[in-house]
Amino acid sequence: MGKPPPPPSWPAEPIGTKLNSGAPITIELFLDLICPFSMKMFCALYDGDMFAKLDGKVCFVFQNVPQPWHPQTVYLHE
Image 1 (spheres, rainbow, N blue to C red):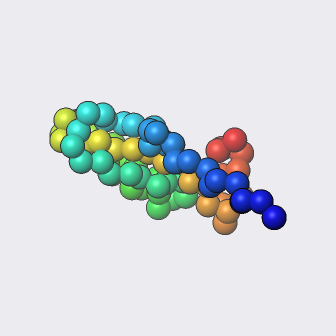
Image 2 (cartoon, rainbow, N blue to C red; image 1 turned 90 degrees about the horizontal axis):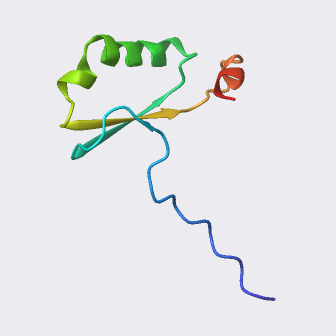
């Protein structure tokens, strides 16, 4: 029996879409935009100008997370 293969390595950069960059603090948003609660969270940040107010202070990283209990989300995330 030989050695098991090595585990996969972590990505060098965070996976996701950076909405602001170059800030010392990073907040990751794990949202599914089909979900009404996730959409409410995103709209509260976007419509409340949080991205503009915290530009340079906080980096927001948007992570697409499909939630299986929303059937339409599979098509959106593909």
